[in-house]
Image (cartoon, rainbow, N blue to C red; front, side):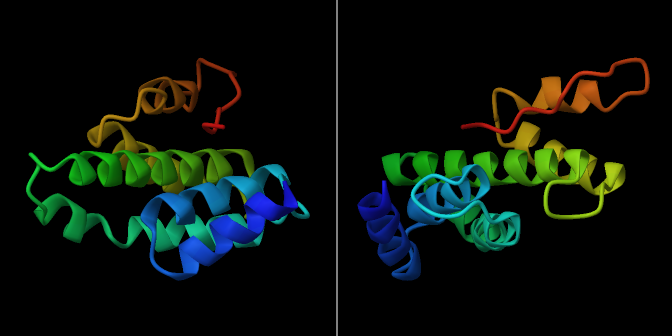
Length: 129
């Protein structure tokens, strides 16, 4: 795992959206490195700031859809982190904002995660692994 972490970090630093997202996952889960929620948030946010460029890309290109999926994953993970208080103070409103972005981009778990923030439900928010 440590070798994979090294390669993902190099690719993320070189600008790969997918590697940035995967690096965020590795930090969040402690895969190949020490668990570090602050670094996970940092890398997820590096992905989400690219949203406008990704949406402006030709949607017929396979890379455009893959990039959109990575951004949706990052928004969902950020929403889960804010909803659960992983590395940040719990912030329901911010979690909802991130999860709504993920849902709008088609993330498969975002709707369920949004529903779990409603007062009637007590389910755990799930970040995508």
